[in-house]
Image (tube, rainbow, N blue to C red):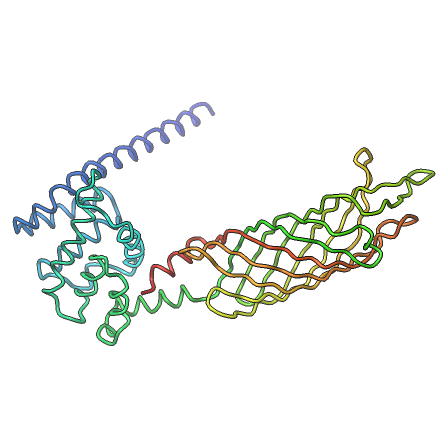
Length: 360
């Protein structure tokens, strides 16, 4: 067994050393390419340029900056065709859009930023020498930073017959298709009881909620806490007698399900109902909790925020019915209205950011 463990450790060590060596080779060749590629363009040495790009790709594997250089070099050398890239090109285009939005500076101390600025300038210089409405024009527009104009060109009739346009249409369909999205939200609001619960008085509620949305449906797990004192003391059977308390620490753990109606882009109306356990702890020193059922119906709105629509905010209004939970004591069943504000983050695996990057 020791020999087996030793073999595993040695294999992991060798693999780690190989990975470190590959990363070092990629880093060194990238640094060399950042300085040498611009000179090879200027000196009109296409053979050396394509050789360096080939070595760069072998050393680093699929990298956006290598693919960008390969495409611009092919346009520059009048050797461009759709064989230069595959259907994974949109991963690179999405990645470059972030580069373009960072506005790289040619005078930067960072060699990578200087190189990004160089390729954007190169694409701008190549653009006038391309045919209007061509794929070459699309890439020159895109890599010069005019990404919106590039997407508009790709969606036009001029490029309708290209593989790139077909892949783009497929990307748009995938990005627009309804998918499951998770979100985690913080909650805060007000809870106003009525009926037998009216004596408690209004309370502030805080909590958190995990939500799952899929197309027109939603499923949520809220946990809400209402902390405070009752407006009037109430009595609770305890042992052979009763005890009075004005403490009303309560927690609601529920499951909500409902329907979502899209009102506008990134704005939705939620219609939902829920059921859960509504628990009151009347005494801090006693392990006693008074639990009842909580049925609710509600109406809410949600909107997506942020440049990549990865933040969410909204409001929910609910009507609640709480069942009996203090047998032999002060009735603690009743009704309530609650208003809660929600702010959270959407966990969609970067789909919103990709969708935004693929739009003009």
